[in-house]
Image (cartoon, rainbow, N blue to C red; front, side):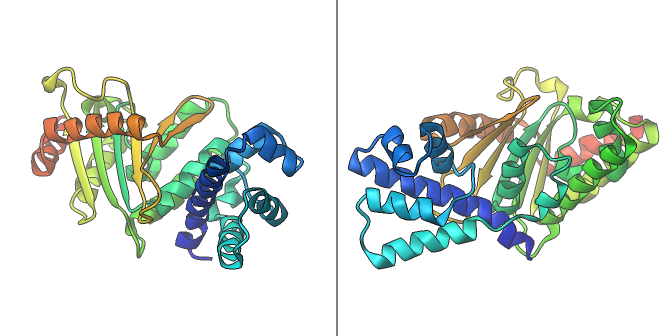
Length: 287
């Protein structure tokens, strides 16, 4: 199965969920009433509308009937979307080491046409070398079996293939200087990581900027975040905020706008790509 197809299933779940929510709202039906009609809870309807769960054809059919959708063409289109949304992604084979809340992100990452991110703790996962990734995972999971660490590193390397795929997204990363100075894995690992960043920054679909200490306070004061944009025009941008044991996915227009403003300021205030490469070369010479 092509990576794009499996990643697209996550986007289709979100699209279907948003359309079901729109239909429910237009009929003035509560989530509780909708849940009752399919023998489920209000929270199940909420998760369906957010695209967080798979869809049973019978549930979709019953909801469409409840919402007054009788046109066969419209029903068939939404049921087809439900079937496509249930296609398992490649990352499901890593279910033993992949938290459920992160599976959604991996799917969205693979389906995005534009990924913008700000990182302060360490180099973004899509830009990590294998040795650096191993050091990050090992430190974050102290005491974990070696086999589990290797599986998590393998997953990270598999994710990186999206940047060189046939439908590779545009990737724009702002790395805080702190992420580049915090050592993971020793001197040679860090030197190799810096060289890798310089090399990756020269790829046509990748823009890399460094926010230096010398700038002082900046728009990324709230911490790391990622913004995802999709080729589907009816799917809004999503802001991803990772926490220790879960993640937040923001898609409300007013919330996304605040992060859009912060990202724009980070792009404007950080040195440009060429000057950032010079900063990376300077750090390499010092390491």
